[in-house]
Length: 250
Image 1 (cartoon, rainbow, N blue to C red):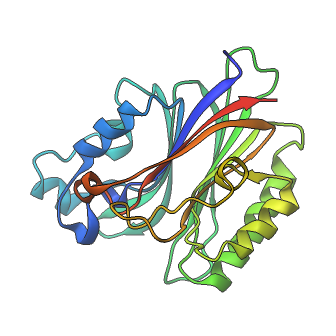
Image 2 (image 1 turned 180 degrees about the vertical axis):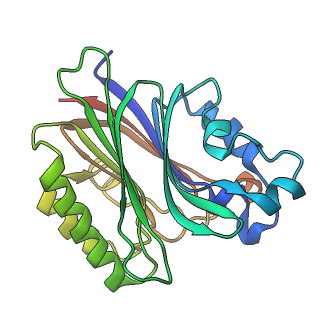
């Protein structure tokens, strides 16, 4: 069905496993391919790092975003958030459909922590309006997250038509869920795991998830399926689990 969309969100931890013990970008790409997702929301993608590119033979010269997208997701976008002498990292979005517009918004709440919001408009065949896909990575402290969620909400109210299909996904760093619930109510959105399974997904640490850090919020969709991809094998992949959802446009 052309109205059905499969999406995923994943914090790649710059291509490394927990505590940077192992470079795992190749394993991450293989795992993402098995999900058969149409659109993937990625956080902490380290597109450039001069030292790592010399240290690891499997480091992609073309950058992590292009390496992860490869031949599966012909369109992709990258939002540079954190810049340092050796390189930079940020959010990314991989899509099987044309990305027709991209905006990267700085939502940093403090100079100590660079955070961003990547907004893409995606043309999906036979849809009468583009999909608005927003990938976020919020701060570590509650008062920073509250400020960032207000910024994201104001941005959406300004730039996303109320009748347009909308997905916001990423690492919210919000284990209490309080701020995010107020955010969702303001934008008339639903969190897919809360709505479909009755509770927010546990996604961290990936091998035995306890904390509810990653989320998927939707507007204009029915939720067909939601799943957390985690387990012992994630020790060799990333410290975050992968969340997927199957959605049908209303």
